[in-house]
Image (cartoon, rainbow, N blue to C red; front, side, top):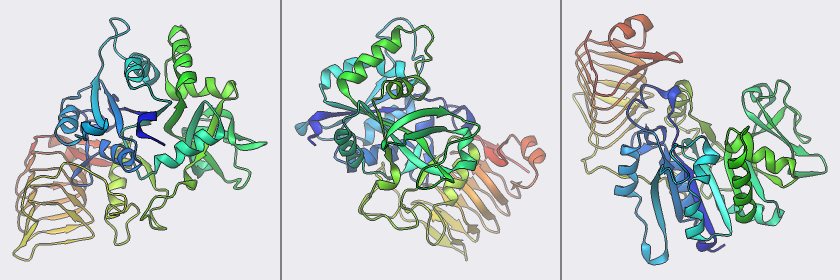
Length: 407
């Protein structure tokens, strides 16, 4: 499939309210992850590795750091018509901002007209996974459907809070029904204890997609949402197919991290996804050189350990200094400094943060440019943490950006 036949649209306008205070002054897709990355790097890397290199990123809320990240790093060669373009909300259809994910694309249909693709790929910007999207595109074309939804197998017991895809009994690749948070999710024919949940990733045949976007925009009852309105409309018309994520084969994937997908929409999930990275055999392997995750790398020297400082089952990025401190099951971003006699456990530290002498920190996320004073304890007493200016979300202590925390 030629790159010129496909336009990829990444929906990156979400507020990320459930990740506050990490999203206090940045869009959710711009939230740092895994020491050196931002959430949006995963979908962009998947698209680039899949050979889909005409990419429009639709932004809206608090997009400055996201726009800067894209403009400074995600530059492709114009010689072959490749680009990653950050596109802010422009009110092209009237004096209003995006009313939903479908409205965001409707208001940006000029991008589709200009690119003139045969197919439109629409993916979210804030999940952690690897996927060869070209395989899903090939399945979409072979199906003859107007829309294809990526589905991931989840236990039925966990599916009642998700959008659930019910395959057609006569053709398992077609969607019979799309159920939003069903109380009794239907099991799969080949695995009755599992359901197919929507990953929020879609591929459309252009003409049918444009026509439905226009009809949806004219509807006064629609919420103009991709999963809530557009996909159900294609399902009702018998024009929706499902792509089972289990069928996707990414080069270099291990049995342990094959088909890994994590929605990091809550603080608990965001923290746990970091813990998936740091075990000896990780749940999600950042070290797969056959399918790299790209990002902007800082120009700093290698991490340094002095006076007996050590880190176990952890990721320690460039520019960090761990001096006489113990770091366990944690992720340290570039430029973090940890002073003697401090201990970090299950802690995620964003860049350029200082942690003083004799601190004891567990189950905590510390946003960038923070200063943790000598003797501070965090992650053990929620009320105490709140009294020091921290937030406690989903049982995780979160230190806001630029904080100065004293004992």
